[in-house]
Length: 293
Image 1: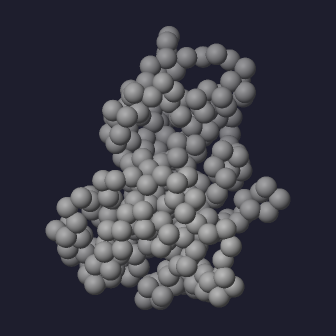
Image 2: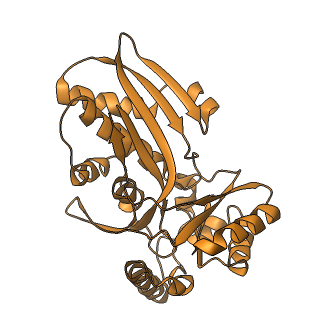
Image 3: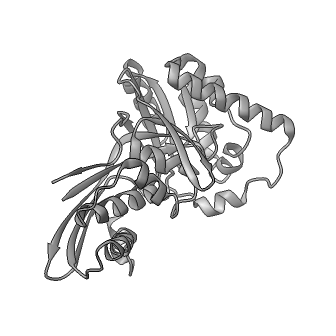
C-alpha cells in the first residue's frame, strides 16, 4: 500500500490558523507486512531523519494500528519526502494525516476524509494545514466543540504557486512566542476584513483582489523579523508579477501566487535575486491525501 500526501501553505496572510491550501509537492510512503521492521528514507532531510531515534510517522502509525487491531504485525516503511522540514510547508501535518490514514488502510478499516480530519486535529491543534492536506484545494476551517468544520474550493490550473524556500529554518514554537498576547481593535478589524475578502476571492476566483486581501497585522511581520530577507523576497515578488505573496505557515518559505503565464518569469527573477533560496513552480493539488494499492 502506498499513500501520498501534499504539502500545504497555511495562514495565507490574514487567515491565521484557519486558511490553507494544498500544493503539488508530496511525501509518499509505501508500507508492506514484513518479518521485521525496516525504515528507508529518501529525499528531503534524509540524513536528519535517519539520525533520529524515533520516526514520527512510524510511531503514530503503530499507535493507531495496534489500537485498531490489537496486533503486533511488523512492517517495512519506504518514505520518500519532498516536503522540507521547518519551512512552513506542512511537513508535520503531512506526517500526521498520512500515518493515521495508513494505519486504517493496513487494518482494512474504512476511514472517511472527515473522520481523518477529526482524528488528526487531536495531534495537530490547528486545522489550517491539516484540512488542505486531507481535502486538497483551498480550505477554510474553524473548530466548534472540538469538531473541525471546513469548506473546500478547487483551485484552477490557470494560476500557479511559486514558493521561495530559504535554506534557514524557522521554528513554529519560537515564532509563536514572538506574537503579541493582545491585539489592538483596529488590527483585529483589519485582519477580519482581509481574511473575509481573501476567502471570497478564492471562492469567486477573483485573483486581482488578492494583493489587498492577503495583507496581515497578526503574525507575518513579527515572524519575518526572525529572517529579515523575507521582507525583500515579498517586495521583489510583487515587483515581479505576483498576485499575492505571504509567509507560508510560520516560515521560512514565502508563498507566491501568480497567473500561469507569469510563473516562469517570477521564478527566474526570484532565483537570480535570492541565492540562499530554492524557488519552485508548483501546481495546486485538488485531491489531498490519496492511497494506492
